[in-house]
Length: 467
Image (tube, rainbow, N blue to C red; front, side):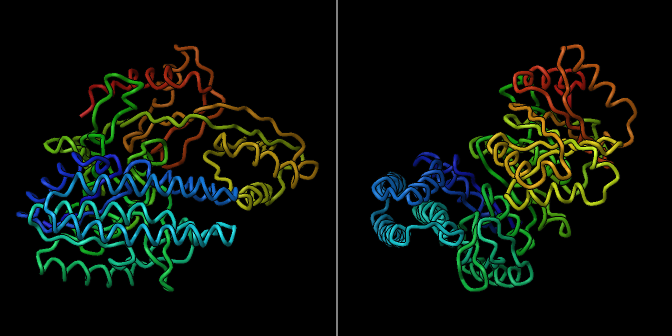
């Protein structure tokens, strides 16, 4: 098989973990042609983001302190991970070159006194650049040929939308397949840095947080992979957060559309755009644990088999949001009201997570993250209050509870079962939404009611007996 195997940061953050996965990859490479995609090691991306914040505050010493923390962490990992002297020496030379480039970049950013989206992408791409050298060298240490490649090296070409770039798939397909096929012929394992590519001018671009999943499906689509494995510290997608529901079950199989909904509503294992490159090719994904390799995890396919078409697959939750109720008599029957509201929020860079409008059109209710709440209220008041908006009411610290499952489509009584379960637990619902696809039923409760609501729904739909 042609396999793309992606490792999250928690899977490659200690020498022991890197040894474990390199041994597993060694065994797999004897039977399959594999491409490895890696995230940055744990804490590295956060530290790089910390460097950018320090530069914005003109605090050069704080930026240098974080840089030395990153350098020391990776030097330590290199010495602990690689046993063969020649392989270790080569790795340390490569890392020193990357460290010198990172420090030169920080100096340049400090000198300019600004952080642009372009320099930001260049800065935070270093996390993956460093981790692929470690993993590739660990594979070489076992006597298997391997080479580290950044997203740019492997041939991922994107637009120039720094921070949220999208791949130019036709160009990327030609370049990636050519690069990877040449390495397969040499029996060499490519270890590719996730999260980043480069635009047509060669400038480093990133896909946004969690973008290594997206990198793995882009590469998988380009090389016509048989399967893509997303490896992390979890066994797969669950019926609920196991920290909330003790008897939450592993989902054996879900569809692409269900997995996309789960990604948007709190299943942190997947980047929401991960499935875009796969829709036409219908390549299956497995979400698996790096540490329990005998566990097959969750299989994600274009359409699930009839045996697993449960009404509801999981209960997800997203806490710490704010609810804004926007009211005004002049909103009624006025074309373009919603467009003005959402254009105002978009201009301020605010993502709206949920929307509800009553049929009278006299109010629109939206949900944003708590961190965006002040900004959202300020821009709406500044731009629209007293014009189309007469009143804004704000509720802080609310949670989105979402029921997800393609089996809800056309099934009578799902909503009544939900609201009975919620009523029994004396939980108040502030807002409800359901799309016409009936794939997702979402509602808003107080943060403090999240656990009770999730447990009540998990019980009501007997999700502990799924599969």
